[in-house]
Image (cartoon, rainbow, N blue to C red; front, side):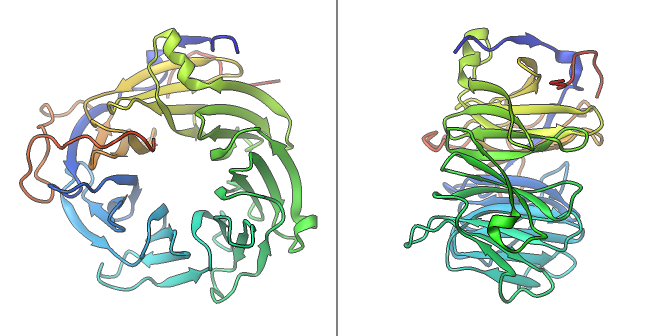
Length: 374
């Protein structure tokens, strides 16, 4: 594949500055799977099967939630709530107004490891994707959150490998997207409980999907990233728009990338952004165009290992990242009052650095063209 066109566009986003960073658990090998913003602060899922909370801006520890018995695969925030999914086969919904010692307000149980999940825009449907079971079925479970005992529907014929991604449509409450290790992107209409009737479109990416989601002013497009670090763009009717191939090839254009962290669509600027990282902990932000990339900026010094999660709010000017070095970092578009210390004393006194973990597992102004394939 030809070299991916890439240009420099530093004015496309305000510059994110590192304000503070903290170890999630000093002195341990614990690392971060993801870090998100909730109504009570930053929540980080960790490899010791906890969700830990930190004060925004200062990263002082606030407490933790512990319920799952296996790896936490995904966390999401809703109003006054946190949702967590795990390879223990459960999804938990926590009421963040309650003490952190309290049990989840709701739990949804399956027999298979839950790899991804999402909640519909109206909170009336919960969808989960599972790992392949002993009978070689990869199930998608649909629940009514008001009746959590049993799924209202189970789709088990659309995928032949692990269902690694579930994303609900941002405006149509009964539509959702699934991605799988079998390379397929499937779009469903959940108002139909029969799987054949519910399945609307299927796109074959040819690569094991590790991330996908809707983008565009009307969520009319879909991005798909793979665990081979490839990126493709599709319409939501399964017509391919772009195939960028291996984004690590951007190194030939002077942008060193070892892996994809994720993509984010910003509705205000109507642009799709790619976050990618290096094994040394740098984060590169790029605008994804119709057939090219624009490199915007690099977020540096926040981490020393593989970055697992990055979440941001361009309107409010902040970003949160979590990595295999066990650190959570807080970034903002304002200048810090003083340079960040080596590591804040967020949980207990720590050394100024932590041994790197293995990398084996691996957004406001500007005149550049937005993604507009037509």
